[in-house]
Image (tube, rainbow, N blue to C red; front, side, top):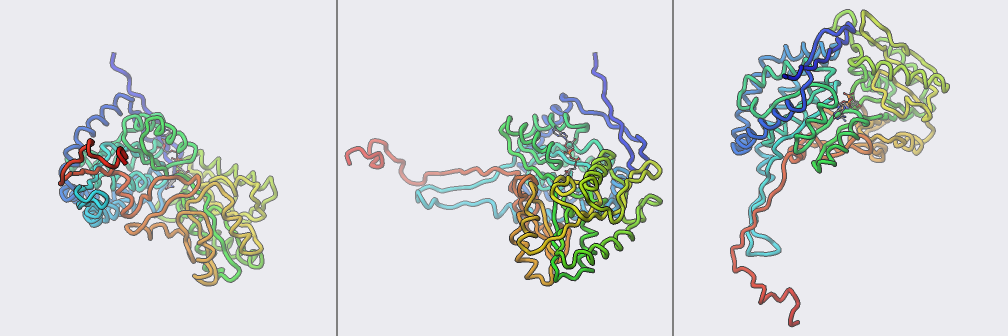
Length: 483
Ligand code: NAD
């Protein structure tokens, strides 16, 4: 008897209605797709980086033709806002950047010469790709985070099996229209759909894993990879702090903090989630921040207008409301915002500024992932640094001070991979230059940006050729006999 297809309804974040359905890939389907990719990967890797670049350039052309449609699909998946409509163009930038960078990155990785320890031995150091890279991605920035690892993996010569979030599948469907238009790419790039157990099935079939998502799921992924003894790269959450010193330009600081905290409804891994302000300027800063926060408009009337959209994932609204309630119950004050609103089925929260917060509150400890800005005052610089470092996480941090030098001196002492000085949200400045590591619970693995990120998909192999006489064990003085 043929097995029945299991389906999953997908909610629309603007209406609250389930208006889309996906089928859940069975373990057999995942295995069959992985086997097809594994078979085709041999040709993909053997063709070399120059030929792969030609194919990826054709894909870039297809993405360009569909960039608007991809943006529309992203907007339906996530609830819209200006960030959605640029996703197709961000993908083009990602592919285009690797088209320029991959050939040189590869050339720098390979080496041939004579051994320095055994001068008659010639060494050829080669890199070979992991055959199948499994990518498991989240519902926030669903296209960008599905591709940030997949694109360099493909350039490296790996085949990619993607398991996108079941919460935001529409944009991936639009993307794969472009992949199918390039048959050589479709041969090595495929996706499967469904919830967490489909992610586990991908791990069971892959040679290396790139996971982006929450800390609890990241732990499960790490355990499953450890059982199979395959490497994994984990990009997890954050609880990113911003320090504002007494000497800072407070207008600038309030503007930068607001954007860094509420952009994309705060559903960004490197959103500002905690703000520490020197006590002398605390009240003035909070007044400026609240005034600016009240000017932020929802996009409930028109997805293309307004500054922030609804929560993409309904349970996230409950988590955020719970963090606010916990803070208030423990003595915090809501200065502005604070209540999730149901507007025509979409769940919205206006930028929410809280004061009187402490590190005993969930909102200062756990990832909130919403447009909340808890502000705490500090006395001296040592206290600010201690508070910023009082976290399990370490993704990014920001410092806004009277001068760049003052900000840098503080930033150097914060335990996080990306430190933004005199502004917030500077992650994109790292693209194509150098990435950064994640500290603590924010993840592990090599940086996913810049030349080092390609290396994650490659294993080094050494070919050692003896060009001189071979050693004779009967005459081998190293063994010590006769000494
Ligand atoms: P999530 O952990 O719930 O899910 C992520 C993906 O894992 C989804 O595709 C999901 O289906 C899959 N999954 C769930 N259970 C699984 C299991 N047991 N085995 C394998 N796969 C499983 O995360 P989310 O809620 O979709 O995304 C939001 C989280 O992602 C936030 O914590 C955010 O901070 C984090 N994030 C991190 C970064 C980063 O670069 N550090 C970037 C964006 C988002």
